[in-house]
Length: 118
Image (cartoon, rainbow, N blue to C red; front, side, top):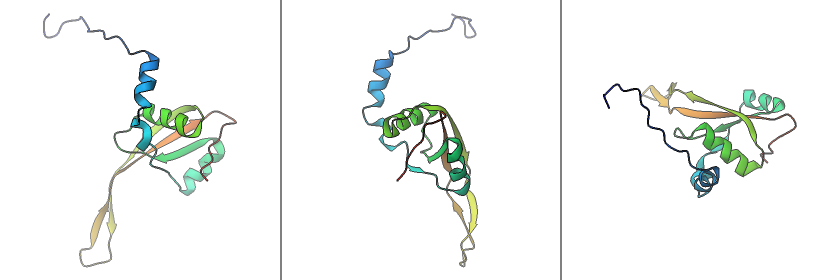
C-alpha cells in the first residue's frame, strides 16, 4: 500500500460489557474531583446543569460514567471547558504569581433528575 492509500484499517470495537468492566476497575475514582461552587454554577443547577472540577486528562465519556456510577443518574450531555492560567497579584515584593490552569465539566441532566451534594 502506498503512503497515501485509500484503504483504512478497520478495528473492531470492544463489546460494551468489556468497556464497562474496564472502567469499573477504579479508573473513574478520581474523575470528579469536586463540585464547582460558584454563583453561575449554582444558578445552573436550577436548569439541571451541574459543574464539576475534573483533571486535565478526563474525557467526556469518563465524566459520564463517573456521574452515572457516583450519583445514579444518566447525563444527557457533557461539555468540557479548559480555563487558562491567570496572573494574580501577590501583594509582596515579588509582585505577581500565576493561578494554575483548570478544567471543568458541565453535566446536563434530563428534566426531573437532580444531584444532591450534601
